[in-house]
Amino acid sequence: METGIIILAAGNSSRLGQPKQLLEFNGKTLISHVIDEAEEAKIHPIIVIIGANSDFIRQEIKDKNVQIVDNENWESGMASGINAGLSALLNYNNEIENIIISVCDQPFITSEIFTSLINTKNKSGKGIVASFYQNIMGTPVLFDKKYFGDLKTLTGDEGAKKILKLYPNDLVSVPFEKGEFDIDTQSDYLNLQNNKKQGSV
Image (cartoon, rainbow, N blue to C red; front, side, top):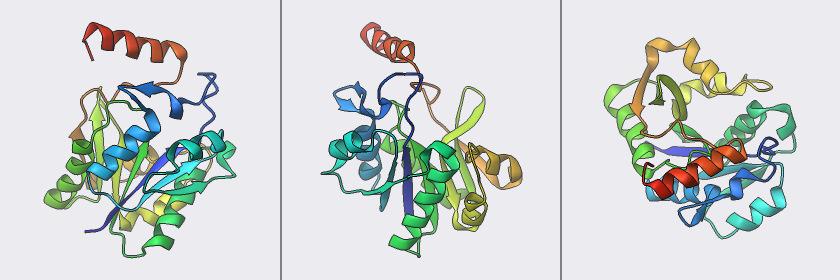
C-alpha cells in the first residue's frame, strides 16, 4: 500500500522566540531529522508544510527529496497545513492509500515509529493508527484514505486528534517511547539538552 507523509512545519514558534524547525539536536536540525527518518522508512512522497520563516526552512531542506508546500494561511491554524498537505499529496499521487501526519518538534521520532504505524495498519485492518505516550494518543498518526474527507473538513486550530475522537472503534495505537518530548519553549529545549548530557534521554 502506498503511504505518504505530511510534515507540519509552518508554525512561527512564538513561545520559543526562534524557529523550532531549525533547532539542533544530535547534530541535526529537527526538521532535517524527521525528514531523514521518513526517508529511512521508505515513505514517499514526503510533503513538508512551511509558513513562518519559510525562507530559512526552505534553505535548510532544499537538497532533501521532499515536496515543499508554502502554506500562506498558516496563521489560521494547523488545519490549513493538513489541508494544504493533503491536496499536494493527492495531486502528486492519487493512488495513495494512507497518510501519516507528523510534526517536526518531537526529537525522538524514528523510522521505526513510522514503520510501526504502517505495519500495524496492515495487520489490524484499523483505519487510524496513532502514537501512544503519556496516556494520550498523538502524532505521528496514520489515516486510511477513507478519512481524507474528514481531514479536509478540519478548520482553524483543529488537528487530527478531532478525527481520533470521532472514530474510536476504528482506532489502534503503537507505543512511542519519549513521544511526549516536544519543544515549545526555550526551557523545553534546555531541558532536552541537559537530559541528553545526563544520559537520561
